[in-house]
Length: 277
Image 1 (tube, rainbow, N blue to C red):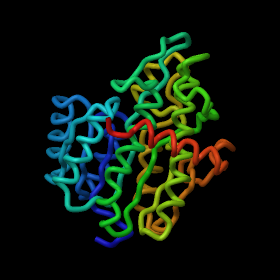
Image 2: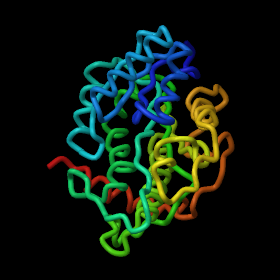
Image 3: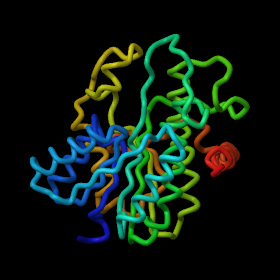
């Protein structure tokens, strides 16, 4: 397989929705797929089902609750021990807004839950896996973000004041994009690319169906899978990095993502928040 067609992919949040559908697409195309989830029984069942349906035995499950930094580190350690290479990392796992007036929740480490799960875990996992990615030629990182974005308040990243589920969700998604742009600069010339993606608007997933913020599904799941597959495998994108895509098209993100000072402040805050105790 050529460098522009990676053969080993880790997909976080691969037991449902976009992650599961992407894992299935890659499995059917003969990729070695590493599936991640937070429910071991469900994860093993999904993986075995995909093995049977695809005939692909190169599917392996890894369990971790990404609401815990310790479990995120352990996931990275297990992956480094088990895998000789990693061509694609898809930071897809995430949680969506529940309902207006929903109570603020905290992660296992005491961080605001949307920021912790949707952004901070991906930041940590990516950095922990960078040596593995850099040792695999032409590796790609895709951060599954959202068109729903809101500027981060660096004086209150954890939203202790004026909390709202949708605000927390949107800030966590913009944080992913700031991280994408910042990391792309750091990785320039390394052979590893990193891009952010809004796969499709309101796909038919549990995240959309279970939220009182959304009117219901507006896009087929396959639309998002097509966009994600394009970013992780298209030969013409092998050297494209530091971009935000809406589906198949490069688009402009929230203006804060283009502010070098904002990206630096997020990088510094993230390093502190993920520092091993």
